[in-house]
Amino acid sequence: LYHLEEKRRQQLLNRHEFEIDEQRQEFRRKRDELVKKFDFELQTMEQKQKIEIERESVLLTNEYNKKMKIIKI
Image 1 (spheres, rainbow, N blue to C red):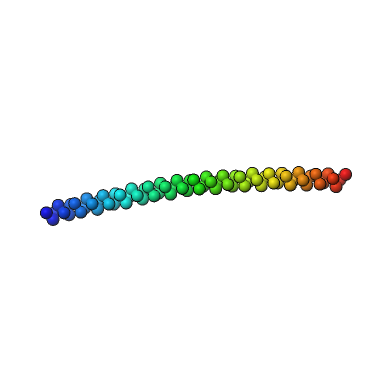
Image 2: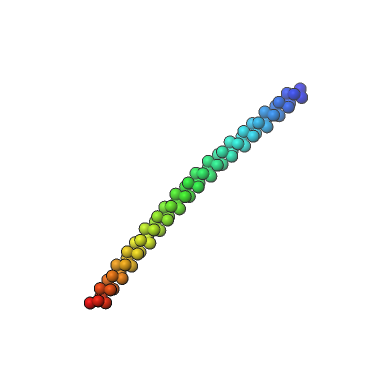
């Protein structure tokens, strides 16, 4: 009887360890997905910022060139 109880206890312990391992894997998978998602969003934001900075630079350069033409005239 003791042997059967010990065997049952070991089975429960093994199952519990297996479930914990599954939860760890699921957690890692979700964490990796979030990291990828936020990394992509960050890259997108950086790209938008670069585009906006470039646009502002072109506008300022155009404005500067117009003023220089006026000054030269």
